[in-house]
Length: 171
Image (cartoon, rainbow, N blue to C red; front, side):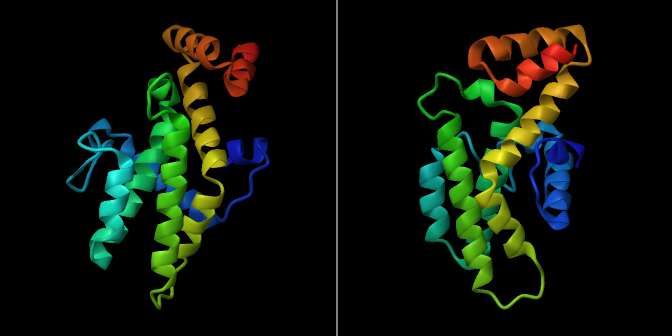
């Protein structure tokens, strides 16, 4: 929450709770890129998105959520791993935004009493901001040891990322 305040990003409490749960779940690396039997390394996200859109409701919700969640985590914590690749950070951001947007619309058509669809609507609209918050959290956690500072400096050299620059200046 402190990082959201520092960057002046306002989101619902339910969205904060959702992202914290996402981080807790994805903290175990084996969950990343392999969520609920979905292998994110086997095909491009655009094909997975097409599969989701023609799937039955339950499978569609599961696939869209997984695409959005994986894209958010990857662009927030490991953006440098996508640098110079054909499918770069902007591709994953667009796919994540789109997945959350479609998920919001899918859930909105269901008569439900919970706010899940509002969470995904907010994540779709503020995807880049939320990825930036996750990136800042990642950078700050890396800056607590020498190896992390070197990694952060290398990230700054490669991307000229403003958040990385600020953290390095604080150290």
